[in-house]
Image (cartoon, rainbow, N blue to C red; front, top):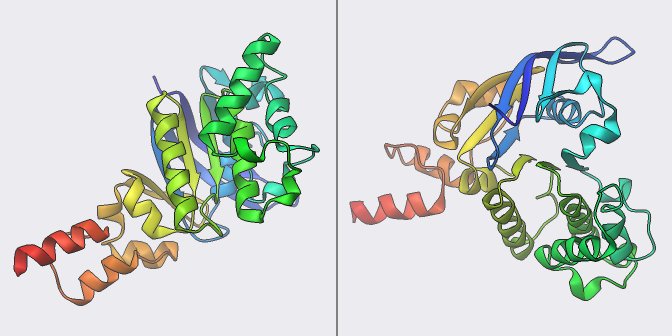
Length: 268
C-alpha cells in the first residue's frame, strides 16, 4: 500500500479559483520524486494538500492510512514535513540549534533522544559548526538548509522540499543530493518541487509533470525531456545537454552530461 496517495483530488480556493483538478498520484516509502511544471500549474497546492495545510474540495488524500480530512494540520505534519520555498517563512528562534531542536518537541521522546535527533539533523545538513549562530546571520541559501534540518529532526515519514535548489551553488547542490539520498536510504519519501531541469534529470528516476492544474505525465526524465509537445504544454525546457543532443540529431534520450559524453565517445 502506498505511504501517501492523492485520489482524484480537486481544490478550489475561497475566491473560486480552482488550483488542482482531479489529480491522482501515489508515493511509496523510500521514493524520491520530482514534481515539475510552470508557476501556477498546481504544484505547491498539491504538496500543501499532502501535508494537511489544505484540505481537498473533493477526492481524498491518504497519509500513512490517515484521511487528511479527518485529522488536523498538526497531526498530518507529524507524518509529512514541509520545507517552504522561502526559509524566512519558517525561522523564528534565536539560534540555529534552537530552531532545529524545536522541531522535536512534538515527539514523545526524552531529552537525550531529542538532543540526539537534533544533532543528527545538524550533522546531516552540515550546520553543526553554525549551531550557536542566529539563522539570519547565514546567507539565504544556507538558511534553506536550516529549515531542511528542522524538518529532518521531526522524523516525518514524508519530506517535501519546495524549490530547494533555488539560489544554490554547485557545492550546496551536492549537499542537497547527499541529504536526499540519505533520507531515502533510511526509508523516507522525499518529494521535491524544482525548476532546475538539469538537477531533475541527474537525480530523479521518477518525475511528475503538472500543467493547467492537472498531472499530465508521471514517468522518467528520459521520456519527459524528449517530448516537445509535452514540454510546450507544460512550459518547461529540457536540460541544456538534452537540447544540444537534439540539435546534433543524436538518437536516444540523452538527459545527463554522463550520457552525452558516453554517446560522444562511442562515436569517436
